[in-house]
Length: 469
Ligand code: SF4
Image (cartoon, rainbow, N blue to C red; front, side):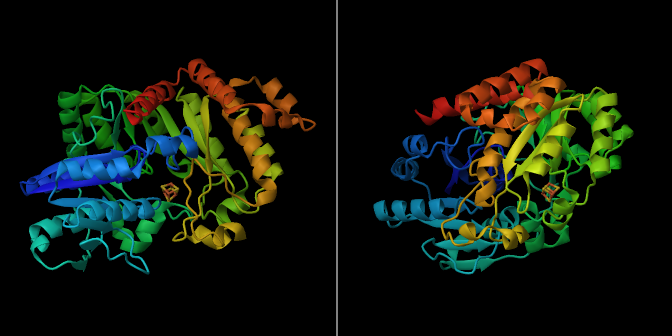
């Protein structure tokens, strides 16, 4: 049986790894697998450039439909996602118009009020668990319809993700993306992980054993000669005992430079030391805002400014560079909040980059209650944390200025930053074209020897080239 996966979006997210797992599960049942991939270059999920016009050139539904038909699969599998539902439905419709006997499966992790019945099978539940049940119980021999499964996959029992599925598109030698866990312990009001946890319960958060992760990396070294790793876990550092055991094995068997994510309220000297000694070249913290009231009441995040500053100080002491995530478009945020953040950032010694994000109001997330009315009125609202500016209309233009400024801030000496912040001088950033900001970001990367930025730039150029082929 040949199973074809169809996916649209950037690779560096959880869903692509889920599809790799689905492929390896299918192979366990002696299926052949293939992929038709739309990288969504310049589209809503592109975290570098969002150009809808160019996106139309690189992302054509007709081409995707033709590629699917050409593969002649027994089943076409779509994985639903926060920004993919409509695209999946359109592709499903198109391929059925060309070949009405083609059999399609839609996997829904989050239940919906109305279910599109154009697919032959709709599987509801955690994708890995559900798809395994579908194949094991031979549901493909049963009548078309909706099948729900409650249960969660044991991460250590899953076959290793099928990395060859995306290997035409992603240079794993340059950077290897890895998750050692699934889900998150925290409950931030805007986050996909919270939505999944609300759907599946507290057990949704799980972690692989150190041995299981190391076996994946040993295979990746053999298959792709990997040279760098990015751990995409929500909070890689949260469990010190796991970390100690894992990093001891890691140093012994893998020993490659890596980047990971940490959380200030569970970060200390011991963790910084463990990271530094095991090859971590950059750690990323979520800040989002320094307005503690907004953070607590709207974002449902509990770390205090004091905890954040303490974590940064520790990194400074250990010469461990750090990136920070900063969110724009938070309801009730003000210019004062942005200025306060800038004053803090300009004093941080090992701050590498301020990664600016735009708050996205997923209708399933608690933050949606705070969404501006124009978003609630828009039935076709689709956004991603990188592409679409959000927020109350009166602050959108101010946010645009600060987004540009924050990208440049780590390049500038403190005196210049103080000078810019005075007397409305920030307005000058209105006239800075994006290309100039990108050049400044490149200079930040050179100044801070930011390995990740340069890797991502190479991956991104490759993505553009492949999109036009
Ligand atoms: S800590 Fe990060 S991953 Fe976890 S819920 Fe909050 S935003 Fe999401």
